[in-house]
Image 1: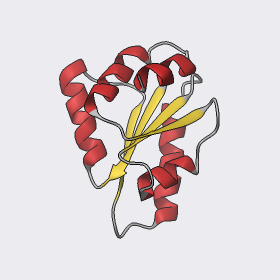
Image 2: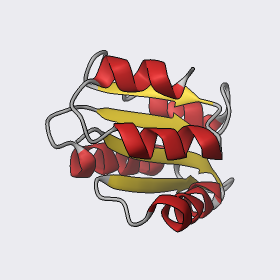
Image 3: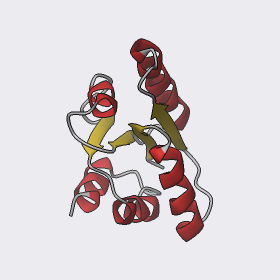
Image 4: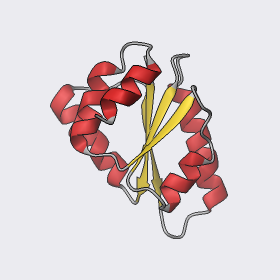
Length: 117
């Protein structure tokens, strides 16, 4: 199963997770990281690394952020490893619901393509 980590400004990631689980049910290998304005950014980066490690079952991890160019996106990109940990900026609820359905397989490239279609 491909792991998912949501990284956003404030508690948006947590709320997205609640919405996804409301629609498609409880999710395994799914973590959230909230970035606050006054947070220690090195600690938040470490939190992202830890979250990625927790959800990685060997099929890879997709990290989704709320908007490109923001602090959450920049922190996520700093931990990206091509083919193992990929980042998608600009997540939305339909994208997350689609990913939740297709990530059970191990095809990271197909999941990335489908999420961005």
